[in-house]
Image 1 (cartoon, rainbow, N blue to C red):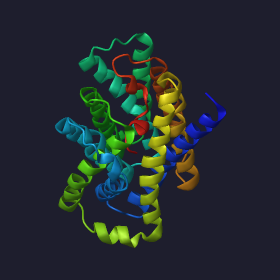
Image 2 (image 1 turned 135 degrees about the horizontal axis):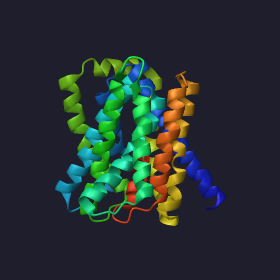
Image 3 (image 1 turned 90 degrees about the horizontal axis):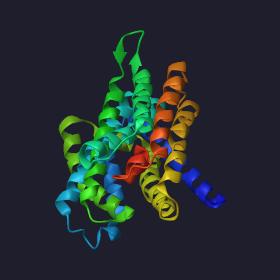
Image 4 (image 1 turned 180 degrees about the vertical axis):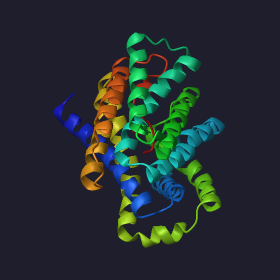
Length: 299
C-alpha cells in the first residue's frame, strides 16, 4: 500500500474511532436520547446524499430490509449501548460483527471455516465476555448487551446484501438514511421524551457532533474507505482497520476520562487478536465478513 493511501486509511480509522467517543458524549453527557440522535443523524445523511438516491435500485424491498438491519435497528441498539456503557468497551465489543458475519456465512452461504478462523471466533467472543462480565459483582454490562445484539443485526444485513445487485457505497448510505430516519423517529417519540429540548439544549457542540457524524464519518469515512477497496484487496485492508477500536479506546480514555482497566486491556487484546485472525483468512462466500463492523455500516 502506498504511503498516501495508508495515511488516508489511518485518517478514516481515526474518524471512526473518534465518532464512537463523540456519540458517547452526546447520548450520555449531553443526555440527548440515543434513538432520537440516531434518527437525526440518518435524516442528515439522507439530506446530504439526495443526489445518490437516483437511479433508484430495483430491489427496494430487499434494500428496505437491509436498511432496517444495517441502519435503523443496528444504530438504535448501538446508540442505546453507548448511552449505558463506556465508549472504550463499545469500540471493542462492536467488532463482534466480524465473527457474527463469518458464522452466518457458514450457516446461510455454505462458507467453510478452518481451525484458524474457528479459533479466532472463539477468541473474539472470549475477549468480549471478559470485558462485559464483572466477576466482583457477578453482573454483565447491560449496555454491552445492546452492542452485541446490534453487531449481530448489522451482520445479518451484510448477509442480506448478497441478494442485492451491486450498489455504490454512497447510494447505499443514501437509502439507509432515507429508510431509517422515519422508523427511528417514530420509535423515539414512543419510547423517549424531551428529545428536541435535549438536542437544542446541547448547543453548538451537539450540532457539531451531528455534522461530524454525517460529513466526517458517512461521507468522508465511507467514501474514502470504498475508494481504497477499489485499489487494494480486502485481505490487506481489513486487518489494518483494527486501528479503529484502538483509536476508540485511546480517545475514550484521553477525551472522556474513562478508566483503562486491566480487564479492558486483556479482553481487548484477546478479542482483537481473534478478529485479526478472522480478517487475515479470506471469506470466499462473503468477503465483507472480514471488515470490522464499524467499517461496514454507516457509523
